[in-house]
Length: 165
Image 1 (cartoon, rainbow, N blue to C red):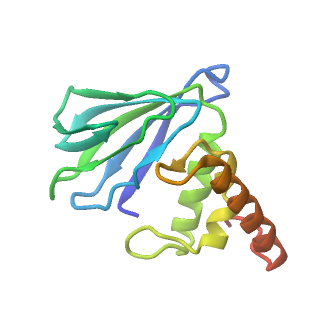
Image 2 (cartoon, helix red, strand yellow):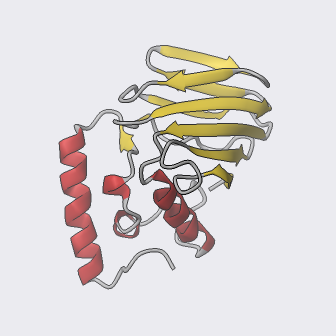
């Protein structure tokens, strides 16, 4: 995947107020797709490296000490601006169920179920709890994504995909 995450604070330790984690991305890594968090504010603070931020209509490069905040429902993504590794601190408010989605997604990676670009089998991904994770593609209506993910999750379970190892 080209990413590593270490939890700083989670729903259990913050009464559901925040999920905070350190995020490292390998230089040149493919950033997450433009996405929305319908009910969460996402704050990214750059610790090291140059980070390309696309949030709303803004496209800019951030350096150490700079922060970008995406409001609930605002399309956004971040990733390395070049070949240099980057470190960020991410905060999502409120925490909701995003932590479980991250844990399950990285479990698929550790089990070797993603390709070199970090993409996994869509049926395996459907078992990560994605439909409840507050991470949705920016250009497809949420209702369609939730319904599709729910259907894919049912099919995945019928085919024996019971979630990440």
